[in-house]
Amino acid sequence: MARLDLELVHRGLARSRTHAAKLIASGAVRVADAPAARPSQPVDEHADISVAASEHDRYVSRAGHKLAGALAAFPRIGPAGRRCLDAGASTGGFTDVLLQAGAAEVVAVDVGHGQLVDALRHDPRVRVHEGLNVRDMGPDQIGGPAALTVADLSFISLTLVVGALAACTEAGGDLLLMVKPQFEVGRERLARTGVVSSDGERRRAVTAVAEAAAREGLALCGLVLSPLPGQDGNREYFLWLARPGDHAAGSAGHPASPEEDPAQWVAAHWPATDPQEAPA
Image 1 (cartoon, rainbow, N blue to C red):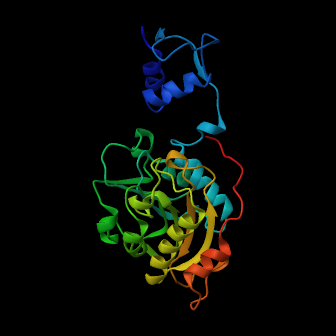
Image 2 (cartoon, rainbow, N blue to C red):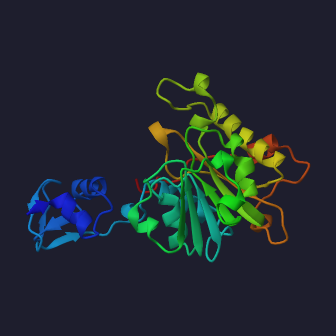
Image 3 (tube, rainbow, N blue to C red):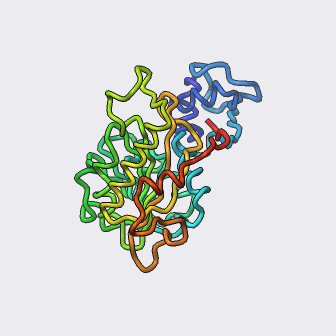
């Protein structure tokens, strides 16, 4: 006999014991056609165990739904057939989305170790670079520049890394960066809850990233609110940028003109309403 959560992982029906516990709690797991009771429920190795498919569990982490929503908002970006860079890969939610969207290769970079789920770590299309600080990253460290760069970074401002991200993106390539105001405004402007509640502060945070991107020569192409809130309920945003080149997909978006002030561009493209809540 074995614990149900361990048996789910052993059979490949769950990515981890934590994931297994979430599946059981959601009612998605049945043992011998009866609802599973608890993660520690003893089961025989030959027991009939099933897990109901759920759109909520389509990606290896909740963050995947955020990127999927942004790609849906900017369909011209198109990961299919492209070499992609996932900066701040963590467990691999963004990497998973890119692969499911047809990416030819994903370079998964993270400053930590051992977070990427095994299914992605052993995927032949994934190149894993752990212990690599994005701020110090160069194209030579990741096997050359990517055609599409996505980023989900915490505890650091994007204004400090957008130059490195631009350098790791090929001419004509795209960047889709998740701007987290809670890591942009500074601790002194955060509420005790860790939430940036002021729309003005959120806009200033996005504007600061847009200005830093413009200084790196990147074109501002699109801005959308993330379909899911972030840490502690913070609103987060996706900023679509393009590195100039003959085949820049960004030219098909709504790029700022060279003389347009980034603050004015952000104000003109600021999301007016919240999107529908996506799967949690």
